[in-house]
Amino acid sequence: MLRVGGEIDSFCTRCQMTLAHTIHALVAGRPIKVECNTCHGIHRFRGDAGLPSPSKSRSTPARPARERPVTVSFDAALREKRLETALRYSPRETYRLDQVIEHPTFGLGWVSAIRDASKIEVTFRTEVKVLVQGKG
Image: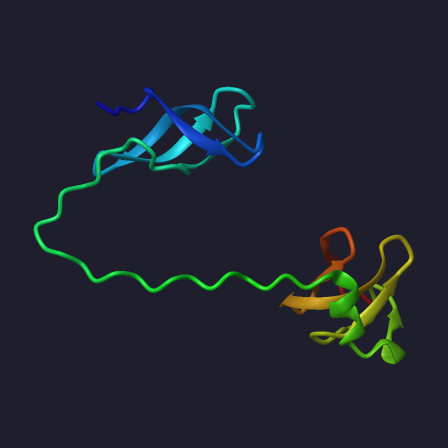
C-alpha cells in the first residue's frame, strides 16, 4: 500500500534514471510528488509501472495523442529576427517585443516578454535573463 513517506520507483529528471524515491504527496491513492533518494531533487511522480490503475465507475473517452513540441535552435530563431535593427542594450532605453538587442556580457538576444514598464525578459544563447528598461 502506498503512503506518504513510503518509497516507490520513479524516473528522476536530474539523475536521468529510474531510482527509489520517497513519496511526498498522494492524490486518490496515487503519488504525485516525490523526492529522489539519490540526489534529493523533488519533482512530480514519473512512472506508473506496477501501480494499480484507479477504479472508475464509467469509461472515459481516450485522450488524443499529444503533439511533440518542435525544438528550434537559438541560431535559427535569431535568423528570423530583424538583426539589422539590433540595439546595444542600455537600461535607459525602452524595448518592444521581439526586438533584437546586443548585451555587452550576454551577446545577441531578443526581447521574449515584457513584464512591466520597467522589466523585460531577453532570450540569450545560454539562458533567459530579466533586464531593466526605461530607467533614465
